[in-house]
Length: 428
Image (cartoon, rainbow, N blue to C red):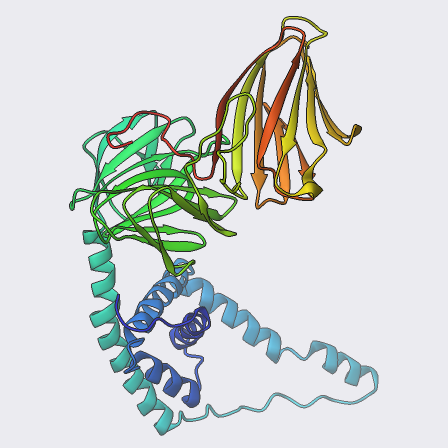
C-alpha cells in the first residue's frame, strides 16, 4: 500500500471508535472524529477503513454468539433488581414509617442532531468499508497464493495437512519440527521453510508479494520486489534471483544475503553479498574458520550472534575435551568449557562457575550446542539440558584441546541465520 502509514496509536484509536460505534456508545464529538479518520485525505483513510472493518466484524461476531434472548433476560433482571426496594422498605417499616412507591420516569427523546450525525457516519462507514475493507479482504484472499512444490515431513495450513501441488493462501502455515516445505510464487520466487535449529516448528504466512516469517527458518530465492517480513524488520529483494536466508529466534529476526541485494528497513540500507543483519546491526555473514582452532579468517570481525554444534564420542572415562574461547577483547579471555563423560563444566580463569550433569551412562555420545546472543550471553546445551553464561565480551573463536582418546566433530559454526537448509534446495 502506498502513501503514509499511520501509527499503532492511530490504529488503536480507530478500533476503539469502531467498537463504540458498533455498540452505540459514541457521543457527537467521537462520531465526528470517527468520520474524519475515515475520510482522511492524507492517505490514511483506507487503512482506517481496514481496521474499522476488522473491529466491526469481531464485535458483530461476539454479539451474534450472545443471543438476544440472553441479553433480554439479563436486562430484565437488572431492571427488576433496580426497582426492588426491599432493604429500604424493611428498614422504614422497622422505624414505623412507610416507604414511597416508585415513580414512573419518562423515556427521554433522542437528540435530533445526534440522530442526523449517526446516519451520516453510517453512510460514510458503509461506503468506506465497501471501498476499502471489502476490497482489501478480497484482494488479500485472492492475491496471497503460492504452490507447494516439495514437502519432506509434515506441514499444515489452518490445521489442514498440505501435500505437493496444494495451493497456499494467507492463512497460518505451520511446518513441523524436522520437516521442510518448499513454496513457489507466481513470479518465480521460491522459499524453503524449516523449523528452528532448536527443534521448534516454523510458523509463517504467505503474502501476494512475499512471506511473513514468525518463527523458524527460511531460504529464499526471490525476484525483485519480493518481501520478507520478520517480527522486528521488513526486507525487500532489490535484484532478481537474490538468495537470502532468514531466521527468527525468540522474536528476533536475522537475514543473510548469499547473492544479490536485499534492502533492510531496520538498517535503512541495502545488504550486499555475504552480509547479514540482526538486532545489533550488520555483520559479515559468510565466514571462514578452521575446524580445530576455531579461529576466523584474518581481519574478520566476529558477529554478535552465532551457533556451534558438535558431536562428542567417548572411549574411556578419563577422556577430556577442553574448548577455550578466544576474542578480540581481552575482557573475554579465560572462559572455557571442560567436557568429560557425563559432565560439562564452565570455567573462568580456572574456576568453575557452572556445570551440567548428564543423566544415564557417562560414556553415551554427547550432542553439544552453543549459542551466543548479541555478544552478551552464551547458552550451552546438551540434549534437553542447558545453562546460560553472561559474557564480559563477545566470543570470536575457540581452540580445542583433547586428552585421552575422545572424538569430536564440529558440524556447524556460523553466524545467524543458518547458511543452508537441512535438505538440498536448488540454488542453495
